[in-house]
Image (tube, rainbow, N blue to C red):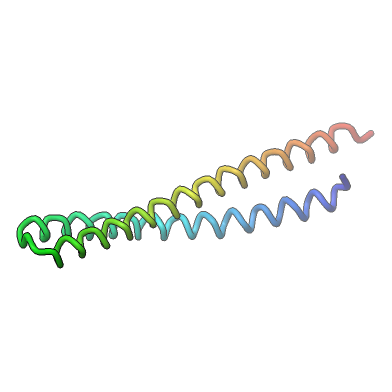
Length: 100
């Protein structure tokens, strides 16, 4: 693969990493907030002992779980991008070292 193609792919991966890291930071904050909201709703449901309180607690729990899944997806994507970046850097280093 030519050096310019490697460089373009590396820049693309770098930009994607920045976006995923920023999105992951937001997702982490949102997950913490939703977890706290879920716990508060659970406690309110225990105290109120009403069907509406139970429904609100379940809804809050579903939101927190959905955000946890989204966070996991972002973490997986981040790992994949880091692996791709390492591979591209290795290829670039190998090409540079094999040049006369």
